[in-house]
Structure formats: structure tokens, C-alpha cells
Image (cartoon, rainbow, N blue to C red):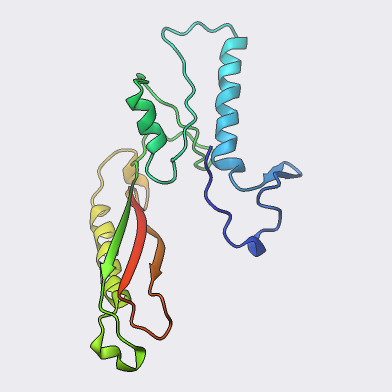
Length: 188
């Protein structure tokens, strides 16, 4: 199963890849999301089997990659013909059953500018400054999309359909006006 990068290791109190047990807690990147969910699903299947429960249909466990960046693993599974009448996703959400989820769409956007030397900044067009305006517009879009949610389950969340920018990269030299910025994000 895939897991997002650990970020700055200095901010970890335990080895992010060590799966260290301290009391009742396992510390490590992905221990809860999604390795814990995968183990929970395996034990649920074992419990059904051990209890001798007869299901009216088939039960399949799918463990796919790409959950954090668009669901290509799930899409590939569907293309192979695997379908079901229902799905249980063991995503940890405050250890509560969540019978609805907004889904996610990942995106990547390139913002063009015009390079110039910093001493002649006004002759250039900063892709960063253009992005800042786009970012404000995206925050407003998120606010508007979430202003009147009537879904009985999703409507109780402060932001049922979040829009998050997770990566921004711009420029290639500190004394140049950046002529390109690339940002990536996800929208529910």
C-alpha cells in the first residue's frame, strides 16, 4: 500500500519507518493510514470465515496503490472487471463509521510568466504573483462549493468538499523573476 512521504524527519519523535510500539500506540508513517486499515480488513475477513458466516455473494479484498493521488489503482481494478455491490474502505476517520465520502480529484496546473533579472523586475511577469491571485480564487471557489451543502451526511462537515494545494514549485534562480510555477492539489 502506498503512503505519503514522511516530511521533515526532525519533526518526528519516532522513526517514521520504524513502526515503533510505545504503550498502545504504533508510531510510523502509514501505521494508521492505511496499513492499519488493511490489517483491519484482513482480520474482518478472518472473523467472518472463523464464525462460519455464509455470505449471499462473494467477498473480495482489494489493496491498491494510488489512493493519495487520484485512485489509479482502483481505476485499474475496475478496468480488470472487478465490481461489487458495496465497498468498505477502512480509511481512519476518528475511528467512526463514515457511510459517505466526497471522493477526490488530483490536478496539476502550470502558470506562465515572463522571466527578467531581479534588478529589472517590472520588465518580467512573475508566475508567483499570478499564482497568488489564482490561489485566492481557488479558496473562494472552495468556500462557495461548501456554502450550501444539504447532503445529510456530508453537510455536517465544516468543509465537505475541500480543495487543497499540496505542492508549489517556481523559478530556477533566486535573482530572476520566475517565468513558470507549477502547483498540484486535490479537490473533493
